[in-house]
Amino acid sequence: MERQSMILVGDDKEEIIIRKSAEYHPTVWGDYFIRNYSCLPLEEEKEYMIKRVEELKDRVRNLFEETHDVLQIMILVDSIQLLGLDYHFEKEITAALRLIYEADVKNYGLYEVSLRFRLLRQHGYTLSPDVFNKFKDAKGRFLSALNGDAKGLLSLYNAAYLGTHEEMILDEAISFTKCQLESMLGELEPPLATEVSLFLETPLYRRTRRFLVRKYIPIYQEKVMRNDTILELAKLDFNLLQSLHQEEVKKITIWWNDLALIESLKFARDRVVECYYWIVGVYFESQYSYPRIITCKVISLMSIMDDIYDNYSTLEESRLLTEAIERWEPQAVEHVPEYLKDFYLKLLKTYKDFEDELEPNKKYRIPYLHKEIKDLSRSYFQEVKWCAEGYVPTLEEHLRVSLKSTGYPAITCVSFVGLGEDATKEAFEWVTSFPKILKSCTIITRLMDDIASHEREQERDHVASTVESYMKEYGTSKKVAHEKLQVVVEQAWKDINKECLHPTTQVARTLIEIILNLSRTMEDIYKYNDTYTNSNTRMKDNISLILVESFPI
Image (cartoon, rainbow, N blue to C red; front, side, top):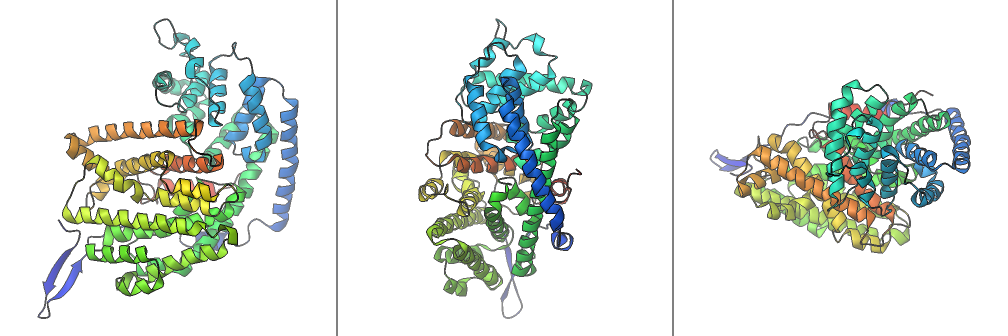
Protein backbone atom coordinates (compact mmCIF):
# COMPACT_ATOMS: atom_id res chain seq x y z
CA MET A 1 0.00 0.00 0.00
CA GLU A 2 1.27 3.48 -0.84
CA ARG A 3 1.60 5.97 1.98
CA GLN A 4 -0.28 8.53 -0.09
CA SER A 5 -2.80 7.93 -2.86
CA MET A 6 -2.70 10.05 -6.02
CA ILE A 7 -5.99 10.79 -7.80
CA LEU A 8 -6.29 12.15 -11.36
CA VAL A 9 -9.07 14.69 -11.73
CA GLY A 10 -10.18 17.23 -14.37
CA ASP A 11 -9.28 17.56 -18.03
CA ASP A 12 -5.73 18.63 -17.30
CA LYS A 13 -5.07 15.41 -15.38
CA GLU A 14 -3.73 17.39 -12.41
CA GLU A 15 -2.35 15.17 -9.65
CA ILE A 16 -3.87 15.77 -6.21
CA ILE A 17 -2.13 14.12 -3.29
CA ILE A 18 -4.35 12.72 -0.55
CA ARG A 19 -2.06 12.77 2.48
CA LYS A 20 -2.55 10.31 5.29
CA SER A 21 -1.20 12.46 8.07
CA ALA A 22 -1.40 11.82 11.81
CA GLU A 23 -3.37 14.26 13.94
CA TYR A 24 -1.45 15.66 16.91
CA HIS A 25 -2.70 17.88 19.68
CA PRO A 26 -1.41 21.48 19.56
CA THR A 27 1.34 22.82 21.77
CA VAL A 28 0.57 22.54 25.47
CA TRP A 29 2.84 25.39 26.53
CA GLY A 30 2.77 27.96 23.71
CA ASP A 31 4.24 31.25 25.01
CA TYR A 32 3.86 30.30 28.67
CA PHE A 33 7.54 30.71 29.49
CA ILE A 34 7.74 34.03 27.64
CA ARG A 35 4.74 35.47 29.47
CA ASN A 36 5.44 34.12 32.93
CA TYR A 37 9.19 34.32 33.33
CA SER A 38 10.14 37.79 32.18
CA CYS A 39 11.72 38.86 35.48
CA LEU A 40 12.14 35.85 37.78
CA PRO A 41 13.68 35.70 40.28
CA LEU A 42 14.30 39.28 41.40
CA GLU A 43 18.00 40.15 41.36
CA GLU A 44 18.13 40.77 45.13
CA GLU A 45 16.43 37.47 45.83
CA LYS A 46 18.79 35.64 43.49
CA GLU A 47 21.86 37.22 45.13
CA TYR A 48 20.65 36.10 48.54
CA MET A 49 20.02 32.56 47.31
CA ILE A 50 23.49 32.31 45.76
CA LYS A 51 25.13 33.60 48.94
CA ARG A 52 23.12 31.21 51.10
CA VAL A 53 24.01 28.26 48.84
CA GLU A 54 27.72 29.01 49.29
CA GLU A 55 27.30 29.11 53.07
CA LEU A 56 25.48 25.78 53.07
CA LYS A 57 28.04 24.18 50.75
CA ASP A 58 30.77 25.07 53.26
CA ARG A 59 28.76 23.38 56.01
CA VAL A 60 28.34 20.23 53.91
CA ARG A 61 32.09 20.17 53.21
CA ASN A 62 32.60 20.26 56.95
CA LEU A 63 30.29 17.26 57.26
CA PHE A 64 32.62 15.30 54.98
CA GLU A 65 35.60 16.26 57.15
CA GLU A 66 33.86 15.50 60.43
CA THR A 67 32.25 12.18 59.46
CA HIS A 68 34.49 9.15 60.08
CA ASP A 69 32.03 6.27 60.39
CA VAL A 70 31.91 4.50 57.00
CA LEU A 71 28.16 3.86 57.13
CA GLN A 72 27.48 7.54 57.86
CA ILE A 73 29.81 8.51 55.00
CA MET A 74 27.84 6.21 52.67
CA ILE A 75 24.54 7.73 53.78
CA LEU A 76 25.97 11.23 53.29
CA VAL A 77 27.17 10.48 49.76
CA ASP A 78 23.91 8.75 48.85
CA SER A 79 21.78 11.62 50.15
CA ILE A 80 23.82 14.22 48.30
CA GLN A 81 23.55 12.24 45.04
CA LEU A 82 19.82 11.58 45.36
CA LEU A 83 19.25 15.29 46.00
CA GLY A 84 21.23 16.29 42.90
CA LEU A 85 23.99 18.07 44.82
CA ASP A 86 26.92 15.85 43.89
CA TYR A 87 28.21 18.21 41.20
CA HIS A 88 29.11 20.62 44.01
CA PHE A 89 31.14 18.02 45.92
CA GLU A 90 33.00 15.93 43.35
CA LYS A 91 36.36 16.08 45.16
CA GLU A 92 34.81 15.16 48.51
CA ILE A 93 32.80 12.28 47.02
CA THR A 94 35.87 10.90 45.22
CA ALA A 95 37.78 10.80 48.52
CA ALA A 96 34.80 9.27 50.34
CA LEU A 97 34.44 6.50 47.77
CA ARG A 98 38.04 5.44 48.33
CA LEU A 99 37.32 5.08 52.06
CA ILE A 100 34.13 3.16 51.33
CA TYR A 101 35.95 0.81 48.94
CA GLU A 102 38.75 0.07 51.41
CA ALA A 103 36.49 -0.36 54.47
CA ASP A 104 36.06 -3.64 56.35
CA VAL A 105 32.43 -4.56 55.73
CA LYS A 106 32.27 -8.18 56.87
CA ASN A 107 29.78 -7.34 59.63
CA TYR A 108 27.47 -5.26 57.44
CA GLY A 109 23.82 -6.22 56.98
CA LEU A 110 21.74 -6.25 53.79
CA TYR A 111 21.08 -2.50 53.68
CA GLU A 112 24.74 -1.55 54.16
CA VAL A 113 26.19 -4.16 51.78
CA SER A 114 23.71 -3.21 49.07
CA LEU A 115 24.24 0.53 49.52
CA ARG A 116 28.02 0.12 49.31
CA PHE A 117 27.71 -2.05 46.19
CA ARG A 118 25.48 0.49 44.43
CA LEU A 119 27.57 3.55 45.33
CA LEU A 120 30.80 1.96 44.17
CA ARG A 121 29.42 0.49 40.96
CA GLN A 122 27.77 3.79 40.05
CA HIS A 123 31.25 5.32 40.10
CA GLY A 124 32.97 2.59 38.08
CA TYR A 125 34.45 0.47 40.87
CA THR A 126 34.68 -3.23 40.10
CA LEU A 127 32.92 -5.08 42.89
CA SER A 128 31.86 -8.73 42.82
CA PRO A 129 28.19 -9.56 43.42
CA ASP A 130 29.47 -12.45 45.55
CA VAL A 131 29.13 -10.04 48.50
CA PHE A 132 25.44 -11.02 48.48
CA ASN A 133 26.06 -14.77 48.89
CA LYS A 134 26.00 -14.35 52.69
CA PHE A 135 22.29 -13.55 52.40
CA LYS A 136 21.44 -16.93 50.82
CA ASP A 137 20.72 -20.28 52.47
CA ALA A 138 22.24 -23.67 51.70
CA LYS A 139 19.76 -24.19 48.85
CA GLY A 140 20.77 -20.95 47.15
CA ARG A 141 17.62 -19.05 48.09
CA PHE A 142 17.57 -15.65 49.74
CA LEU A 143 17.10 -15.99 53.50
CA SER A 144 13.50 -15.87 54.71
CA ALA A 145 14.70 -13.65 57.57
CA LEU A 146 15.08 -10.85 55.02
CA ASN A 147 11.39 -10.84 54.11
CA GLY A 148 10.37 -8.17 56.59
CA ASP A 149 13.38 -5.89 56.08
CA ALA A 150 11.86 -3.32 53.72
CA LYS A 151 14.78 -0.90 53.98
CA GLY A 152 17.33 -3.64 53.23
CA LEU A 153 15.23 -5.14 50.44
CA LEU A 154 14.85 -1.75 48.75
CA SER A 155 18.59 -1.21 49.01
CA LEU A 156 19.27 -4.59 47.38
CA TYR A 157 16.60 -3.98 44.72
CA ASN A 158 18.22 -0.73 43.60
CA ALA A 159 21.73 -2.18 43.74
CA ALA A 160 20.80 -5.19 41.61
CA TYR A 161 19.94 -3.01 38.60
CA LEU A 162 23.63 -2.28 38.15
CA GLY A 163 24.22 -5.88 37.15
CA THR A 164 25.97 -7.09 34.01
CA HIS A 165 25.73 -10.34 32.05
CA GLU A 166 26.38 -13.60 33.89
CA GLU A 167 25.64 -12.07 37.31
CA MET A 168 22.73 -14.37 38.02
CA ILE A 169 22.55 -13.52 41.72
CA LEU A 170 21.58 -9.94 40.81
CA ASP A 171 18.82 -11.16 38.48
CA GLU A 172 17.54 -13.34 41.32
CA ALA A 173 17.78 -10.39 43.69
CA ILE A 174 15.54 -8.27 41.46
CA SER A 175 12.86 -10.98 41.30
CA PHE A 176 13.05 -11.67 45.04
CA THR A 177 13.05 -8.07 46.25
CA LYS A 178 10.40 -6.89 43.82
CA CYS A 179 8.02 -9.61 44.94
CA GLN A 180 8.66 -8.91 48.63
CA LEU A 181 8.40 -5.13 48.32
CA GLU A 182 5.17 -5.28 46.33
CA SER A 183 3.60 -7.60 48.91
CA MET A 184 4.49 -5.38 51.88
CA LEU A 185 3.86 -1.98 50.24
CA GLY A 186 0.38 -1.61 51.73
CA GLU A 187 1.74 -2.08 55.26
CA LEU A 188 4.54 0.50 55.03
CA GLU A 189 4.34 4.07 56.30
CA PRO A 190 5.70 7.20 54.61
CA PRO A 191 8.36 8.19 53.79
CA LEU A 192 9.55 4.58 53.23
CA ALA A 193 6.28 3.64 51.51
CA THR A 194 6.63 6.60 49.15
CA GLU A 195 10.23 5.68 48.40
CA VAL A 196 9.44 2.02 47.74
CA SER A 197 6.55 2.97 45.45
CA LEU A 198 8.76 5.43 43.54
CA PHE A 199 11.49 2.89 42.82
CA LEU A 200 9.15 0.01 42.08
CA GLU A 201 7.77 2.23 39.31
CA THR A 202 11.26 2.87 37.93
CA PRO A 203 14.47 1.68 39.65
CA LEU A 204 16.77 4.37 41.04
CA TYR A 205 19.58 3.75 38.56
CA ARG A 206 17.28 4.13 35.55
CA ARG A 207 15.63 7.38 36.65
CA THR A 208 16.53 10.70 35.08
CA ARG A 209 18.52 12.67 37.60
CA ARG A 210 16.52 15.89 37.59
CA PHE A 211 13.13 14.20 37.95
CA LEU A 212 14.52 11.98 40.71
CA VAL A 213 15.67 15.09 42.62
CA ARG A 214 12.18 16.61 42.31
CA LYS A 215 10.58 13.45 43.67
CA TYR A 216 13.19 12.72 46.35
CA ILE A 217 13.35 16.11 48.13
CA PRO A 218 9.84 15.64 49.67
CA ILE A 219 10.80 12.07 50.70
CA TYR A 220 14.04 13.26 52.31
CA GLN A 221 12.16 16.03 54.13
CA GLU A 222 10.01 13.43 55.89
CA LYS A 223 12.95 11.33 57.06
CA VAL A 224 13.60 11.42 60.80
CA MET A 225 17.37 11.24 60.20
CA ARG A 226 17.45 14.04 57.60
CA ASN A 227 20.10 16.73 57.73
CA ASP A 228 18.42 20.13 57.58
CA THR A 229 21.50 21.81 56.08
CA ILE A 230 21.48 19.37 53.17
CA LEU A 231 17.70 19.71 52.79
CA GLU A 232 17.84 23.51 52.61
CA LEU A 233 20.72 23.37 50.15
CA ALA A 234 18.83 20.90 47.95
CA LYS A 235 15.76 23.15 47.78
CA LEU A 236 17.75 26.31 47.10
CA ASP A 237 19.88 24.58 44.47
CA PHE A 238 16.78 23.17 42.77
CA ASN A 239 15.13 26.59 42.69
CA LEU A 240 18.24 28.36 41.40
CA LEU A 241 18.73 25.82 38.64
CA GLN A 242 15.03 25.99 37.83
CA SER A 243 15.29 29.77 37.34
CA LEU A 244 18.18 29.16 34.92
CA HIS A 245 16.15 26.50 33.10
CA GLN A 246 13.21 28.92 32.86
CA GLU A 247 15.47 31.54 31.27
CA GLU A 248 16.76 28.96 28.80
CA VAL A 249 13.34 27.65 27.79
CA LYS A 250 12.15 31.24 27.37
CA LYS A 251 15.03 31.91 24.94
CA ILE A 252 14.31 28.67 23.10
CA THR A 253 10.60 29.45 22.82
CA ILE A 254 11.41 32.88 21.33
CA TRP A 255 13.81 31.20 18.86
CA TRP A 256 11.13 28.64 17.99
CA ASN A 257 8.51 31.30 17.41
CA ASP A 258 10.90 33.30 15.21
CA LEU A 259 11.68 30.14 13.23
CA ALA A 260 7.92 29.80 12.59
CA LEU A 261 8.20 26.36 10.99
CA ILE A 262 5.00 25.11 12.59
CA GLU A 263 3.12 27.82 10.71
CA SER A 264 4.07 26.27 7.35
CA LEU A 265 4.29 22.64 8.52
CA LYS A 266 1.08 22.34 10.51
CA PHE A 267 1.16 18.55 10.34
CA ALA A 268 4.24 18.42 12.61
CA ARG A 269 4.30 18.08 16.39
CA ASP A 270 4.83 21.39 18.18
CA ARG A 271 6.89 20.17 21.13
CA VAL A 272 9.79 22.56 21.76
CA VAL A 273 9.26 22.71 25.55
CA GLU A 274 9.03 18.91 25.64
CA CYS A 275 12.35 18.78 23.77
CA TYR A 276 13.89 20.99 26.41
CA TYR A 277 12.51 18.79 29.21
CA TRP A 278 14.02 15.80 27.40
CA ILE A 279 17.51 17.29 27.40
CA VAL A 280 17.27 18.49 31.03
CA GLY A 281 17.08 14.76 31.75
CA VAL A 282 20.52 14.38 30.16
CA TYR A 283 22.31 17.24 31.91
CA PHE A 284 20.71 19.75 34.25
CA GLU A 285 23.72 21.41 35.91
CA SER A 286 24.47 25.10 35.34
CA GLN A 287 27.72 24.49 33.41
CA TYR A 288 25.74 22.75 30.65
CA SER A 289 23.56 25.73 29.77
CA TYR A 290 24.89 26.25 26.22
CA PRO A 291 24.98 22.53 25.34
CA ARG A 292 21.38 22.23 26.56
CA ILE A 293 20.22 25.06 24.32
CA ILE A 294 21.84 23.83 21.12
CA THR A 295 20.84 20.21 21.78
CA CYS A 296 17.24 21.29 22.35
CA LYS A 297 17.27 23.18 19.04
CA VAL A 298 18.57 20.14 17.19
CA ILE A 299 16.00 17.79 18.77
CA SER A 300 13.22 20.23 17.86
CA LEU A 301 14.32 20.27 14.21
CA MET A 302 14.75 16.49 14.21
CA SER A 303 11.18 16.12 15.49
CA ILE A 304 9.89 18.10 12.53
CA MET A 305 12.12 16.12 10.18
CA ASP A 306 10.71 12.89 11.60
CA ASP A 307 7.16 14.06 10.97
CA ILE A 308 7.97 15.12 7.41
CA TYR A 309 9.23 11.65 6.52
CA ASP A 310 6.99 9.64 8.80
CA ASN A 311 3.63 11.33 8.45
CA TYR A 312 3.39 13.57 5.42
CA SER A 313 5.82 13.46 2.52
CA THR A 314 5.43 11.26 -0.53
CA LEU A 315 8.16 8.84 -1.51
CA GLU A 316 9.39 11.26 -4.18
CA GLU A 317 9.34 14.25 -1.82
CA SER A 318 11.29 12.23 0.75
CA ARG A 319 13.89 11.34 -1.87
CA LEU A 320 14.35 14.98 -2.89
CA LEU A 321 14.74 16.13 0.72
CA THR A 322 17.23 13.34 1.44
CA GLU A 323 19.34 14.27 -1.57
CA ALA A 324 19.31 17.95 -0.56
CA ILE A 325 20.38 17.12 3.00
CA GLU A 326 23.13 14.95 1.54
CA ARG A 327 24.41 17.96 -0.45
CA TRP A 328 24.07 20.32 2.55
CA GLU A 329 24.25 23.57 0.60
CA PRO A 330 21.74 26.41 0.09
CA GLN A 331 21.72 25.90 -3.68
CA ALA A 332 20.12 22.47 -3.20
CA VAL A 333 16.90 24.17 -2.09
CA GLU A 334 15.93 24.48 -5.78
CA HIS A 335 15.27 20.72 -5.84
CA VAL A 336 13.32 20.57 -2.57
CA PRO A 337 9.50 20.49 -2.68
CA GLU A 338 8.00 23.97 -2.29
CA TYR A 339 6.50 23.37 1.15
CA LEU A 340 9.90 22.14 2.48
CA LYS A 341 12.11 24.96 1.14
CA ASP A 342 11.74 27.09 4.28
CA PHE A 343 12.51 24.11 6.52
CA TYR A 344 15.60 23.17 4.53
CA LEU A 345 17.11 26.66 4.55
CA LYS A 346 16.41 27.16 8.25
CA LEU A 347 17.93 23.75 9.01
CA LEU A 348 21.16 24.81 7.29
CA LYS A 349 21.13 28.25 8.91
CA THR A 350 20.69 26.84 12.41
CA TYR A 351 23.73 24.63 12.05
CA LYS A 352 25.72 27.50 10.53
CA ASP A 353 24.78 29.59 13.57
CA PHE A 354 26.15 26.84 15.82
CA GLU A 355 29.42 26.87 13.90
CA ASP A 356 29.67 30.67 14.13
CA GLU A 357 29.08 30.55 17.89
CA LEU A 358 31.81 27.99 18.56
CA GLU A 359 35.35 29.02 19.38
CA PRO A 360 37.81 28.56 16.48
CA ASN A 361 39.38 25.45 18.05
CA LYS A 362 35.95 23.78 18.34
CA LYS A 363 34.53 24.40 14.86
CA TYR A 364 35.82 21.00 13.69
CA ARG A 365 32.91 19.47 15.63
CA ILE A 366 30.18 20.64 13.25
CA PRO A 367 31.05 18.32 10.31
CA TYR A 368 30.60 15.36 12.67
CA LEU A 369 27.11 16.63 13.40
CA HIS A 370 26.41 17.10 9.67
CA LYS A 371 27.36 13.45 9.13
CA GLU A 372 24.93 12.26 11.78
CA ILE A 373 22.04 14.31 10.38
CA LYS A 374 22.73 12.92 6.90
CA ASP A 375 22.73 9.38 8.33
CA LEU A 376 19.44 10.15 10.07
CA SER A 377 17.89 11.43 6.84
CA ARG A 378 18.97 8.29 4.95
CA SER A 379 17.49 6.03 7.64
CA TYR A 380 14.19 7.96 7.55
CA PHE A 381 14.09 7.60 3.77
CA GLN A 382 14.71 3.86 3.93
CA GLU A 383 11.74 3.53 6.27
CA VAL A 384 9.59 5.54 3.85
CA LYS A 385 10.55 3.08 1.08
CA TRP A 386 9.67 0.10 3.27
CA CYS A 387 6.30 1.63 4.05
CA ALA A 388 5.57 2.45 0.39
CA GLU A 389 6.36 -1.16 -0.56
CA GLY A 390 4.43 -2.63 2.37
CA TYR A 391 7.65 -4.42 3.31
CA VAL A 392 8.12 -5.93 6.78
CA PRO A 393 11.86 -6.47 7.37
CA THR A 394 13.36 -9.05 9.70
CA LEU A 395 14.22 -7.75 13.16
CA GLU A 396 17.93 -7.67 12.37
CA GLU A 397 17.34 -5.84 9.09
CA HIS A 398 14.97 -3.43 10.83
CA LEU A 399 17.46 -2.54 13.56
CA ARG A 400 20.26 -1.86 11.06
CA VAL A 401 18.15 1.08 9.91
CA SER A 402 15.90 1.94 12.84
CA LEU A 403 18.65 2.25 15.46
CA LYS A 404 19.86 5.24 13.46
CA SER A 405 16.33 6.57 12.95
CA THR A 406 15.88 6.84 16.72
CA GLY A 407 17.88 10.05 16.31
CA TYR A 408 19.98 9.16 19.34
CA PRO A 409 23.31 8.93 17.45
CA ALA A 410 22.72 12.50 16.23
CA ILE A 411 21.47 13.69 19.64
CA THR A 412 24.50 12.19 21.36
CA CYS A 413 26.82 13.89 18.89
CA VAL A 414 25.20 17.32 19.33
CA SER A 415 25.17 16.90 23.11
CA PHE A 416 29.00 16.81 22.86
CA VAL A 417 29.26 19.84 20.54
CA GLY A 418 28.83 22.56 23.16
CA LEU A 419 31.00 20.91 25.81
CA GLY A 420 34.43 21.93 27.03
CA GLU A 421 37.76 20.13 26.90
CA ASP A 422 36.34 16.65 27.56
CA ALA A 423 34.83 16.62 24.06
CA THR A 424 38.06 16.02 22.13
CA LYS A 425 38.43 15.15 18.46
CA GLU A 426 39.02 11.56 19.58
CA ALA A 427 35.70 11.67 21.44
CA PHE A 428 33.88 12.70 18.25
CA GLU A 429 35.62 9.97 16.27
CA TRP A 430 34.52 7.53 18.95
CA VAL A 431 30.89 8.61 19.24
CA THR A 432 30.34 8.77 15.46
CA SER A 433 31.74 5.23 15.10
CA PHE A 434 28.53 3.98 16.79
CA PRO A 435 30.27 2.39 19.81
CA LYS A 436 28.67 -0.44 21.73
CA ILE A 437 27.32 1.69 24.59
CA LEU A 438 25.58 4.00 22.10
CA LYS A 439 24.22 1.01 20.18
CA SER A 440 22.79 -0.34 23.44
CA CYS A 441 21.25 3.04 24.17
CA THR A 442 19.58 3.09 20.73
CA ILE A 443 18.28 -0.46 21.21
CA ILE A 444 16.56 0.67 24.41
CA THR A 445 15.25 3.74 22.61
CA ARG A 446 13.94 1.92 19.54
CA LEU A 447 12.29 -0.95 21.36
CA MET A 448 10.70 1.11 24.14
CA ASP A 449 9.42 3.61 21.57
CA ASP A 450 7.95 0.84 19.41
CA ILE A 451 6.36 -1.03 22.30
CA ALA A 452 4.74 2.21 23.50
CA SER A 453 3.57 3.61 20.17
CA HIS A 454 3.24 0.87 17.54
CA GLU A 455 -0.52 0.37 18.00
CA ARG A 456 -1.22 4.07 17.45
CA GLU A 457 1.10 4.19 14.46
CA GLN A 458 -0.38 1.12 12.80
CA GLU A 459 -3.79 2.80 12.75
CA ARG A 460 -2.50 4.66 9.68
CA ASP A 461 -0.09 3.79 6.90
CA HIS A 462 3.18 3.52 8.78
CA VAL A 463 6.39 1.58 8.45
CA ALA A 464 6.32 -1.74 10.33
CA SER A 465 7.73 -1.40 13.84
CA THR A 466 10.10 -3.86 15.49
CA VAL A 467 6.99 -5.37 17.12
CA GLU A 468 5.51 -6.25 13.71
CA SER A 469 8.90 -7.46 12.49
CA TYR A 470 9.24 -9.80 15.48
CA MET A 471 5.66 -11.07 15.16
CA LYS A 472 6.08 -11.87 11.47
CA GLU A 473 9.56 -13.39 11.75
CA TYR A 474 8.78 -15.63 14.72
CA GLY A 475 5.04 -16.14 14.26
CA THR A 476 4.14 -14.83 17.71
CA SER A 477 1.35 -12.78 19.21
CA LYS A 478 1.77 -9.10 20.03
CA LYS A 479 1.97 -9.94 23.76
CA VAL A 480 4.81 -12.40 23.23
CA ALA A 481 6.63 -9.94 20.95
CA HIS A 482 6.43 -7.29 23.67
CA GLU A 483 7.82 -9.70 26.25
CA LYS A 484 10.69 -10.85 24.03
CA LEU A 485 11.64 -7.32 23.02
CA GLN A 486 11.56 -6.25 26.67
CA VAL A 487 14.14 -8.98 27.36
CA VAL A 488 16.34 -7.41 24.66
CA VAL A 489 15.93 -4.05 26.43
CA GLU A 490 17.12 -5.61 29.70
CA GLN A 491 20.14 -7.12 27.94
CA ALA A 492 20.98 -3.72 26.47
CA TRP A 493 20.91 -2.20 29.96
CA LYS A 494 23.41 -4.83 31.08
CA ASP A 495 25.65 -3.91 28.15
CA ILE A 496 25.51 -0.27 29.25
CA ASN A 497 26.32 -1.24 32.83
CA LYS A 498 29.31 -3.24 31.62
CA GLU A 499 30.60 -0.35 29.49
CA CYS A 500 30.28 2.01 32.45
CA LEU A 501 32.28 -0.41 34.59
CA HIS A 502 34.85 -1.41 31.99
CA PRO A 503 34.97 1.30 29.30
CA THR A 504 36.44 0.17 25.98
CA THR A 505 37.49 3.75 25.28
CA GLN A 506 39.62 6.46 26.86
CA VAL A 507 36.98 9.20 26.50
CA ALA A 508 36.04 11.16 29.61
CA ARG A 509 33.55 9.54 31.96
CA THR A 510 31.31 12.61 31.66
CA LEU A 511 30.69 11.69 28.01
CA ILE A 512 29.78 8.12 28.90
CA GLU A 513 27.39 9.53 31.53
CA ILE A 514 25.62 11.51 28.80
CA ILE A 515 24.83 8.30 26.92
CA LEU A 516 23.69 6.65 30.15
CA ASN A 517 21.43 9.62 30.85
CA LEU A 518 19.99 9.49 27.33
CA SER A 519 19.00 5.88 28.04
CA ARG A 520 17.37 6.98 31.29
CA THR A 521 15.19 9.52 29.48
CA MET A 522 13.48 6.67 27.66
CA GLU A 523 12.27 5.24 30.97
CA ASP A 524 10.69 8.61 31.67
CA ILE A 525 9.20 9.34 28.24
CA TYR A 526 8.25 5.94 26.78
CA LYS A 527 7.86 3.47 29.63
CA TYR A 528 4.07 3.61 29.85
CA ASN A 529 3.10 5.49 26.71
CA ASP A 530 4.51 7.80 24.07
CA THR A 531 4.33 10.83 26.36
CA TYR A 532 6.28 12.98 23.89
CA THR A 533 3.65 12.71 21.16
CA ASN A 534 0.82 12.71 23.72
CA SER A 535 2.37 15.35 25.94
CA ASN A 536 -0.84 16.83 27.35
CA THR A 537 -1.12 14.43 30.29
CA ARG A 538 1.78 12.75 32.12
CA MET A 539 4.56 14.79 30.50
CA LYS A 540 2.69 18.05 31.08
CA ASP A 541 2.60 17.26 34.79
CA ASN A 542 6.27 16.29 34.82
CA ILE A 543 7.32 19.45 33.00
CA SER A 544 5.36 21.48 35.52
CA LEU A 545 7.23 19.79 38.38
CA ILE A 546 10.62 20.46 36.80
CA LEU A 547 10.16 23.88 35.15
CA VAL A 548 7.27 25.59 36.93
CA GLU A 549 6.79 24.53 40.55
CA SER A 550 9.57 25.64 42.91
CA PHE A 551 10.15 24.50 46.49
CA PRO A 552 9.06 26.76 49.35
CA ILE A 553 12.05 27.45 51.59
